[in-house]
Length: 152
Image (cartoon, rainbow, N blue to C red; front, side, top):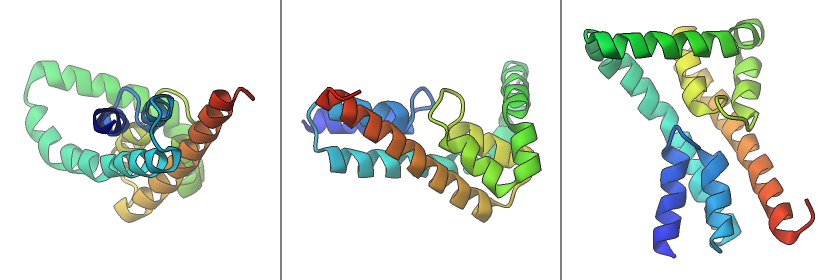
């Protein structure tokens, strides 16, 4: 049980799933549905400050390496193409809705990169990301709960 709980949290911290994978994993493995929601949501919120620290401090050092620089430019272009219009036009609300959509590539990692690329104020971006993660987690949690109950 503790192992499943840790795995759910790790999925929520991972760029390969975030809470969109952590919550269903925990729920399908029989963990307390409310505890899983809170833990996965908070773990996913923790990603934003970690990513901002990485982008501001570590990224500039790693850009000296050609392989990393090519990969970073590729990711930055993908993030700009996917989010630029919405976030530049709508600001806080654009970022919130971009993070809120529970689809691959629209979570807090992309929101953090967009914050860095578009030079959005960190406090405002943190609030937008947190609210977006909350609603995304509620959507995933509700859908998973309905699926487990056999309704959806």
